[in-house]
Image 1 (cartoon, rainbow, N blue to C red):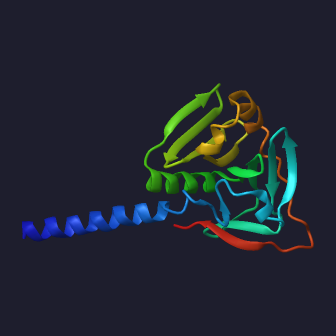
Image 2 (image 1 turned 180 degrees about the horizontal axis):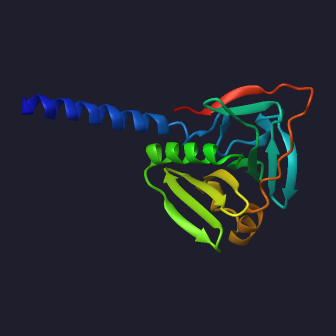
Length: 188
């Protein structure tokens, strides 16, 4: 009997960890249809939001991403020298924040935690060439999820990146007369 429990437990662990690693495998290539390091010229449907020096931020107002049944429309793509290096996702509710945090913990392990001042908390995961940051300002409840492609991030000057990191969530509403297509970006 003890032998059967050991076998069943082993099979369960193999299946569990196998499914966790399978869930994480797409991120090293990019975010959805946007590949890390890919040139902006491949995505003519993106709308330019903001530029400073070699960094430009884009969004696609016709796309609406989903997290289970929750719509997320604040997705901004960061390009350095016209190549994708970052994705920023604005989070509107604590429920979505908690669900994303749970998903990240399951797929990438426990994060490192950094506090900034009295109200800023940043959770950080690393997966292959990707750094993932989940940030929350506990006073005003501003939240965002960010993915950074480290090979391009290293090329940025440290002071230039830090300056732009805080201003990168310049979102705009979806146009009233256009219905965006729904694209699931995290599945539970």
